[in-house]
Amino acid sequence: MDLIARTGNKQIINKSSVTVHLLTTEAHSHTVLVCEIVAVRKTEEDDTKNKSQKKAKLGSQLYPHAFTVSYVRRMRHHQWRCSDVTFQCADLTLCEQWVQVINEQLSLLTNRPRSLLVYINPFGGKRHGTRIYEQKVAPLFRRACISADVIVTERANHARDHLKTEANLDKYDGVVCVGGDGMFGEILHGLVTRTQTDHDVDQNQPDAELVPCSLRIGIIPAGSTDCICFATVGTSDPVTSALHIIVGDSQPMDVCSAHHGDVFLRYSVSLLGYGFYGDLLTYSERKRWLGPARYDLSGVKTFLSHKCYKGTVSFLPAEDDVGNPRDKLLCRSGCQVCQRKTSSNDKRREMSAEKEKSAKVSDDDSGWGVIRGKFITINAASMSCACPRSPKGLSPSAHLADGTTDLILVRKCSRLDFFRHLVRHTNKDDQFDHSFVEVYRVKSFCFLPPDQEPVSLEDLSETQLEKTGCGPICSAQTTCDYSKAHSSWSCDGEILPHAAIQVSVQCQLIRLFARGIEEQQQCVFEDPCTLWAPEPNTH
Image (cartoon, rainbow, N blue to C red; front, side, top):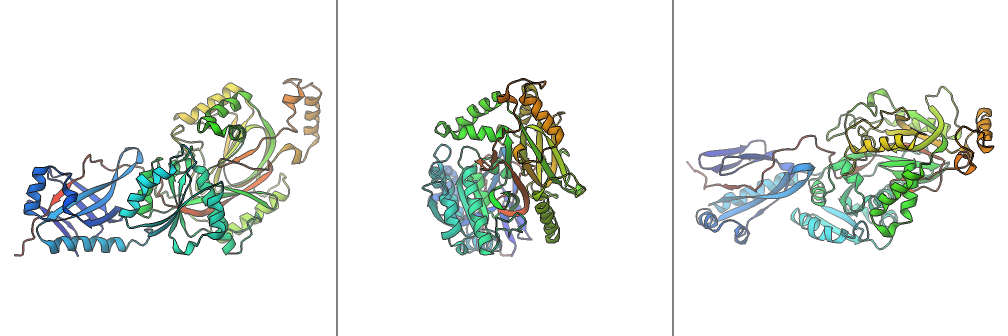
């Protein structure tokens, strides 16, 4: 059925039932995709009181019947808002036909969730999680006729443990977390673990082929850091995230699995960091009572300490057709690179190579690269890791779902050079354009600290020089004994218990209620528009 609205001598027709055209009395039009309509309802008389009395009186006399369409309106800085447009007409049947047809079109959108399981962290960030959900998110869910079972967490890992064992996931279309990156980590581990358990997959085996999760995850940002939400939507705004959930967006995402031997450690979707970021997190955990300010203080302390660590990094490079970390090709909504999927046979071959490599690190022709040295930091970025303080992130060209992670090695350098590298995370300069920085796009990698790596005669001689004070740097064993010093791995804001790890990228293991950052923003209208649709001409 065609949708027709008339205003004066102007007529707007939607022949394909894919878009709805909105026209103001000033003849400004705006097109809304049906997939971005939130809801439609018959408008009660009280709903028109916000209009001017003169216009409302005229409209109620000529057109006593009305319906309201709620739709997504794009704002600046990738933010979305829910706007209303009211259609008024003289014929009740016509009004009901509009509501019926639009609802029929919405019912065909099977990707939209109808039932959600919501976890709220009331302690994260500024402790505003419950208020954010009740005041900004829940009203939108009710308007879109989405039912939600809400659980307010009472302790750390409450959501993870509930998802792993107790939750009846068959009755839900998705899982939503209200909190920061830590809360998302709980949902991630609970949902992925539950999926593997249901399919008899042993997560402790590094070569296990993990089963993708069937339920999507929604993120309502309400934490100290909302890096994952910012990198997948473009903003840390609760209303925007709620609207992405309502319209049923789906963004696949890679997940890195970290193991120590045959023991599973954690999953990561954003940043694995050793050295600088590991030390920073270790310091900040001791000052959680400071709230978000602890990251700034810990960052200053870690920078001033200027530690570097010995180790061996081995990695399996990605194919050339997925690009490289310096190609300036940003991951955006509809990214062509992320639409590629690795075949199951290729996965098995890669996993087999990873298992063989993890058993023994050696320089051979298996395709793996090996780098030994002293590093200030070793980072693996599975996404750009962009945030308000670092708009481009640690690896601006990293992709969300290409089956790779960007391995960034910052070798030993002066404190000033490292400061220059950090500053470039806040501007548009290439942070990899330093002689002491190397970056590789990889499918998996391993790290061995000096106490677990094979020691050559050359390494042994160098160590003896450092211990006897004959080295060229200094004579203090406490500052130069790289063979014993090691840092910790920061895994999406959690500290791993082992320094020796092996990491594999699980391609598109989860999906989010998101669509990636949109490249271009559509026109912005300051006020909702109103259409006056007179009684249809029967001639």
